[in-house]
Length: 163
Image (cartoon, rainbow, N blue to C red; front, side, top):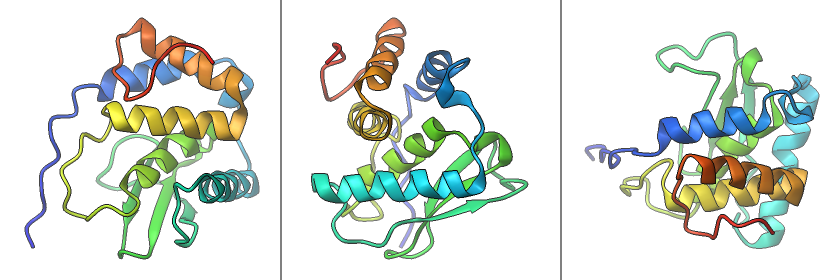
């Protein structure tokens, strides 16, 4: 099967800049230990299961690596098989909000065919990411991220007003 190209990811860099602006200098931007990263990873998928977003699949493996190889940045997620999903972080990516960002990609794709064309930082992703931040850290932090998204006109499938 040929891979399906994702639609142009129009919000990607605006979203990256907005999340950095929202979290830099806050407790959510403090580096986590490897065990804390694992705890955050388990927490988000446990809460997603309770909310009905994660349908009994195994919790993704979290890997801490020195380099992401061909991928730039501090983190990425991928499916190695339909049942096995991984999140890879560099030491710079060991931040709670980075784990929430990558988990939101996995939750967005849960139960969808692997070849679906979906904007990776589009409206649906933004709604799931905001849910993930709120589920892990509380409304204060999801509202802070919503504010940063409003400032740069990020589009979302949910309202960007504060809860």
